[in-house]
Length: 363
Ligand code: GLY
Image 1 (cartoon, rainbow, N blue to C red):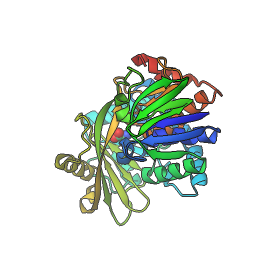
Image 2 (cartoon, rainbow, N blue to C red; image 1 turned 90 degrees about the horizontal axis):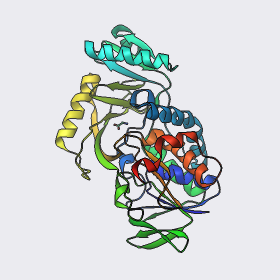
Image 3 (cartoon, rainbow, N blue to C red; image 1 turned 30 degrees about the horizontal axis):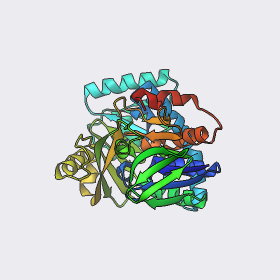
């Protein structure tokens, strides 16, 4: 089976890798190359018990987190590269009475659902993380969470995919149509035909209609800072009401993130950087002395129900969607890839596909 994937972000590349591992001949096209959309400004947090804002999203996130050990070790082995990936947990912190009460409720709900989460008071929090601000009065420790360093993951994913025969090329897809019994991707550089096409173009998916059907995905900008301290200030990801801090092993620190409805504007702004610097320092005061390395912006692909669109098109045979992952593309990439690859290769139709069906948007 010959498959074209449109979009070389973390989702498109994970799908390509999984399909090629299952024996498909795969080509990935992207207007800008790999990891240039939302992926490049992703902090790589793996935190479904914080970011799973609906039952369906939580279910998908927990399921994908369960794939992560295997996914990272397979990709690292095929790419012969190491990937910084740590499951050291998260601390979700509260600084006001109201936040502390919300955290308690969240902790109780998690405990009832069987997840491991421990509520800590301010003194206990500082035993875990001495660098946290002294006004943190409570925190929820969620041990199964973690992060993956996204740049390293993307480099390895591309190498692993190529080692499995995937071809990657720069081409701007414009439309998907059926021609002579095959699926054709019309690009600025010519038409490419395949047995199946997977649309994984994130925020740009709506601009690549499948005949007349355009995926209702809108861009939501996120800005992210990369700072550096001589040593990691924290042992785990910290999540506060105004933002989050991800500590890398080498002293790199990510501070995120803004959530901005500004259309297709990928600019980093002075206001965004200022807000993130303030938020980071409010959580971890030592960040005031950090070296400023970089600020990045990416466009998260959002749908109206904040769930991705994954599965077979109901309007055109041979077309599949893997898009709209909004704030959870890195977390959901492994399970998305498994679901799409099994569907295309005819192995299995996972029940979770019911949660993310394209036809809920008429696709
Ligand atoms: N998942 C983190 C973010 O979207 O900012």
